[in-house]
Length: 248
Image (tube, rainbow, N blue to C red; front, side, top):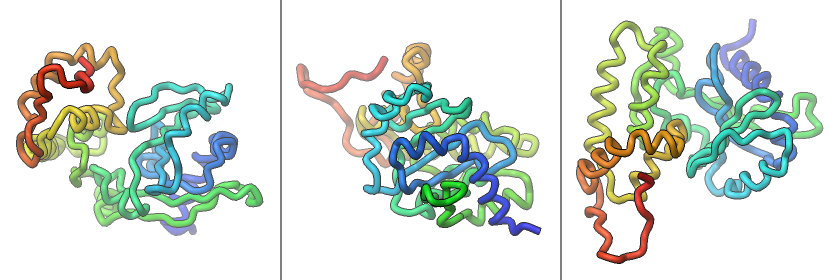
């Protein structure tokens, strides 16, 4: 009988195989994979890079040169592509280790990941260099119920909690909603750049038309929380000062 770790590693290798040619053509030698791809049902494969190990800014022009690769959307924090009829997301969210990366994920059921190497001499091309999951994930495995674990991007968590509703039992998602709202308010936004970074969080990826639809509410949220909570001094550019405008 397979061990739990071997089960998850085999599942990951199987789900990475459709991207073997893409990863090879991009010349990627090492990367992290984390989140829902290890669960029974998943939507895409999320790829992350070790901090300072890979120049992710070169990805977009390289991907544009691969005809079989369909770029679905590109934001400041992620590039989502379709390849071999499967979806992969290159996440611009870097940590120094797989442990640091997975510990930063916001829900218990997503706190599992692996460090992956590539080797053209290997039969499966991909090698799992290390598998890591948290105590929170083990609790999820035992109970079948997830919970909020905290995050650097609480606005993203608020948006995605409804996507994860199936991992909550009954109305147990209510408490995490309150916890996330507390984190959003206590965090605040120290300036426009910080707010935009939160809007561009890996799992939000708001498209221009979606930002336009939410224009009034986004302006209200920014005005309410700018310079509040744990934020730095309020961002108030001088009259005529050059700078970026809000995207709405």
